Image (cartoon, rainbow, N blue to C red; front, side):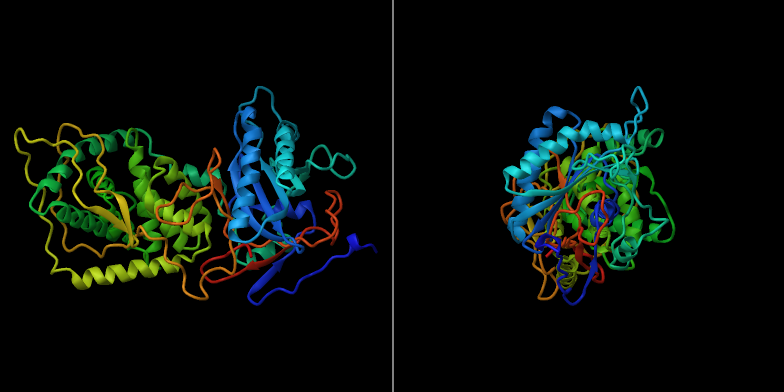
Length: 522
């Protein structure tokens, strides 16, 4: 036995469960467990660090539709993975690459996965060149398409058949899938399905909601101009949120269009949004997720920009519920809508830095307690004053910055949608409003207390620059996603040949199974 044939098995640290990969078949099967969802139209890169080939950063980037952009995207992927790995731990020495794309159903002639393999081969070559340029060797490079996998590094028909090799399915679980599930890793569906769940409703509901949003602008401006000003408007928003939560808790699936419009506009104010974020206790998460998703789906054309606050709240409650994969995808979508949305930036950075959501939740609870302690006796919010003839109802934002999760945002006040010509029907103001929610402050996100942060960094995504936090790495042309932190530990030794499923293959070790969250990475 040569030195290259020997393998080592580092002893797992306390609290870690080893999950071993023994070749490309295991690599293909493990991918959705690492990410938390089934990727599509994606480049996935898994960095391997040190002599033990411990897993470091993991990134996911969209495959550009135009092949002319592949070379640049490959260079960005290599640079991003190296920079993120160095920021969080150390430089990768090898990388595992996945290119995931299903056949085009709209193609003139039916095509199979092998056609996808050949079409993506130039991208795989560009990625290999880019990582070599960063002094990172490619340990394996797979194409995953239509439920099958191929290796870009193997051309032997005897070991890598032209028709590909089926990816093992969940209904026939292998020991690998059982170990991953036992470690608390489970895919949540495809990325496309998660994104599709955020799409606005179509006709006829979209027309009703559009008119309600157009009509809701002038009454909201009159609320801001009324006796209570912004405080009264935020109080009414909080009361409507409490009312909606109670209805959804009782089984309701929707709100009327007028209340929906008032909530969406009121939550553009950071203070109104923060009151919504307070619904984050374990018995509230399911109801809150359904309500925020409903509001996201009511941001119809041309009001799509109103979806950033409810999307961020959906991501926040998903993260608290242990679904970091959905949280990451939804935050990426919120930042596409509004790249400067501070709370989404903070949560995105915290999620990718391995910070436990409970540390942010403690901030929310502390600020809510302080607000309730210091607040005067609650009074019902007065209805908005009637319109004054000749009054200027231009979209003036109220004075004073908004706040969130202990973070003072640079922008202030609500962001109003285009206004229509008539006021929406108003409901009587509800009773006392629920407690407000802390949100991030202009300071860096609160760090977890000793013992709460993951032992090491996790994979990361390309973020928009954060406010007041550490300098973010340059982002690629498309947002990059990363899984919760796992820890791949392929054994040292020779690179596993794609056609041989031998124990000297890749191993992923130290998959952490912690209550409430699962991290990947040292």
